[in-house]
Image 1 (cartoon, rainbow, N blue to C red):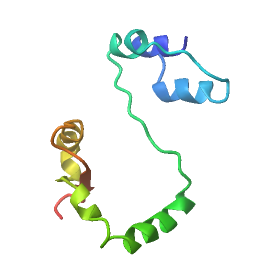
Image 2 (tube, rainbow, N blue to C red; image 1 turned 180 degrees about the vertical axis):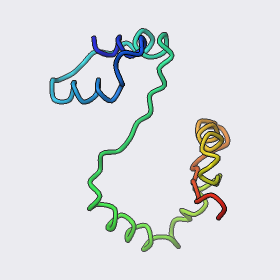
Image 3 (cartoon, rainbow, N blue to C red; image 1 turned 90 degrees about the vertical axis):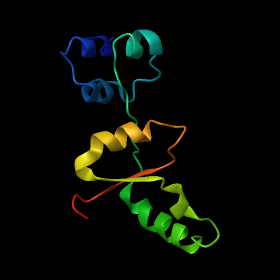
Length: 104
């Protein structure tokens, strides 16, 4: 399997993803393929950018009904991204981390 080459440093993980798109289900054993190889897997969204304006308008419309500003529990300047990521993984104390421009 292509993901086995990742551990040996011979294959970028994004290449694994791009070469497996559209070929159907791929069985992955989380322990063997990820944990035992010390692979940290981060997800990302593939929403089209055209959907964001409508979503932001919806959030703005209901900002008094739902206190969305309280969802942000931590803010870090972008030059402290390592601290921000560590905080984001502390699921007991963190709901949402925001990166702000450095020096802002």
